[in-house]
Image (cartoon, rainbow, N blue to C red; front, side):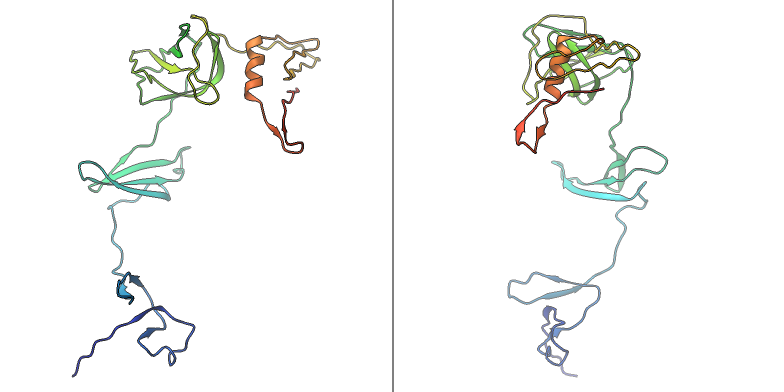
Length: 250
């Protein structure tokens, strides 16, 4: 039986009938793929099927994959899964040599009396927390309630121990402004202050943010708290296309 060379020209052409597409063209396909050919032809390859990358299932539906190779030539695959059933968090893992390691960030929440200290001219603020210990530079802290200390205000997410400070029941953070620049304390202090509001039943307390106080009949006013609010609330009025400072009404 004679043997003749057959060169298939791809990709799949369904615009022409099988009669018109007779010049070694492909009219239909199933489970094939095309590889690059510098000669301009289409190298057709059948799919060889699938093989499990690991011998176990992920804890929930996989939403993202990221592969890389470290400096020791070890192949890694990061796996990001959606929220695991029965929990309130998603799952993040790393696979190498068939072994899965969970690397999902953990979180601890405590509610303590603020204990912090500042040094005039330094952006480093030391925070003491005897409840959650062993904090290192690989941790971060989210301060959910504003803390005024040494003329600066701490609020939001901060890296812990950015200066390499290590202590059993304390850690440091850098005070920063809205642009992320270091914001040195203006005074040395060991007395952090929290927001304080005093209300009277049946009366309305309002704080306007127009650079002035407006607290009719009731309310305790702190200059640093008013300054904080003016910094936090600066939206844009898209109707007038100009910056404005709204009032906060209760």
